[in-house]
Amino acid sequence: MNDDGNESPKKQNPNQPQPAWGSDLIAEMMRALGLRYIALNPGSSYRGLHDSLVNHLGDKRPQILLCLHEEHAVSIAHGWAKVTGEPMAVALHANVGLMHASMAIYNAWCDRVPIMVFGAAGPYDASLRRPWIDWIHTSRDQAAIVRPYTKWDDQPMSIAASLESMNRASVIARTAPMGPVYVAFDVTVQEQPLALTAGHDDAIPSPARYELPAEAEPNSASLKTVVTFMRDARSPLILMGRVSRDPSDWARRVALAEAFDAKVITDIKTGASFPTNHALHVGDPGYFLSHASIEALKVADCVISFDWIDLAGTLRQAGRHRDAPKVVQVSLDHQLTNGWSFDHQALAPADLHIAAMPDTVVAALVAHIGAPIGLPPPDKTTNPVCTQADPSSALDPETFAAALGAGLENEIVSFVRLPLGWLGGSWHFKHPLDYLGCDGGAGIGAGPGMLVGAALAMREGARLPIAVLGDGDFMMGVSALWTGAHNKVPFLIVVANNQSFFNDEIHQGKIAQQRNRPIENKWIGQRIAEPDIDIAGIAQAQGLIGIGPVATAKTLTDAVLEGVARAKAGASVVIDARVLGGYGASMSKGMTKA
Image: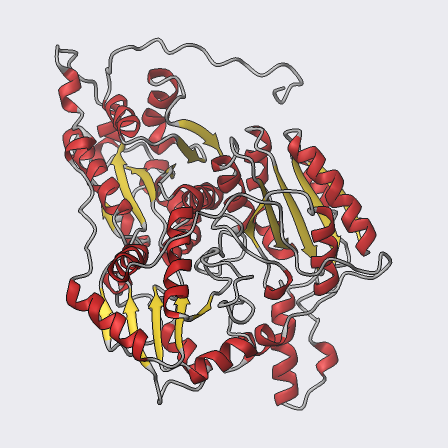
């Protein structure tokens, strides 16, 4: 239905079989690059491209995903990339759209995921600008806004240069270490007419002629050194960080750990990387090390870091920054280190640094030592650790996880996001799609968009995409959910609603305690109450199913059962779960310790 209550207009068949405008070729290039979707919020700076996507390509490959905010468009592409490992296209309107999207681009940068971000500007020729509006939407160096946290950018000034830039951007975004790229198209380039001559397809450079660089392989000397280090160690330890979603890679990681009888630590910042119920897995995955993980690291005499986020900080947590064990660093991340952002973390020691993809090195090591490789993990039903809770109990973190587990007991699910208060030991991850990791840059508001993108990527599979979101994250990104409902993408959100920016309550409590001031005031400027927010109502207003609020174990389990049934029938569902504030010990200590 449209705004007048009438049926929405139907999509017409494309009436322009041959490219006639510059933007037609740009749209054809997007299709040639294999971009299935383009997430966007409309803007006049790329009106030519928008027309070409709709009336030249017929809104197919790429299909438009209409978004209500540019930040959500990038977050949706981020979620897509976390599942597929491939980029989605995003279109941003001039400098204003790019500024809106900048936080989400930074998230994608920190999370090392590929996104093809296309912008628009101009006319760069000042004599062609409309009064007022074209001037405030044009900047001399538009990409400067995001250059410190993109892999590459360009501002091509002709159609031939634009097509070449798109090819280059695709290769750069998808080459490890991956990340977002940005290309801005001048309005005049988009809207210039083309001479319709035979052989116009020759203007589209074939992406097949611009393949990704072959992955670097570890040399035999490096492999022998790693094997010697690990076999000589009494307590070898593996830190499993940013790795692939491939089940075969998962099986090889298990084989490597078993071959060396090495303990394995995982965290919650990255996606599931190793079975948490395996005998060699130690500690609960979290944003910071658990007590058991710290103890394992304290006695380790050889550590292999497979692109672990913040290796130096992790060693410091265990008191090993001055007495570091023998360290092997397997990562390409140093290639993205720059002088603007400190997302590269502190400088970590490395007795051997192998500049290659982690799973490439794992495969080479397994082959080198001839370790037997088991079968890839199957998609199985969910595996909560906390399986029972008093039905009338309020929803503290442990009860929340137990009640959620009871509702999901027979389902195959993928957790797209988990909140800061999640207890890492409350759930077992036994498949690389069981959990997809955090947003990378810790930018609140990314969760809803990332869920929509991930759920879109999993729409044809057997898994039910689920996000457990904080109420602050939900409210900042809530209008991203309209895009999911509009495109009939099934998923389930459970909002862990403590009605507060609770992490900052902890910070304010610590500061008050240090200064001998009333800790009872920590809630002021933090609580999201008076008036209460109708989470379920906000979901319903955007065409989703809204359930709740619920506040006990039984009512949450019942709501989850209902939500699962609705989602499996094709709906987008949101549950408002009223939870008590609380973090695990490692989280509380890690987030507030200076």
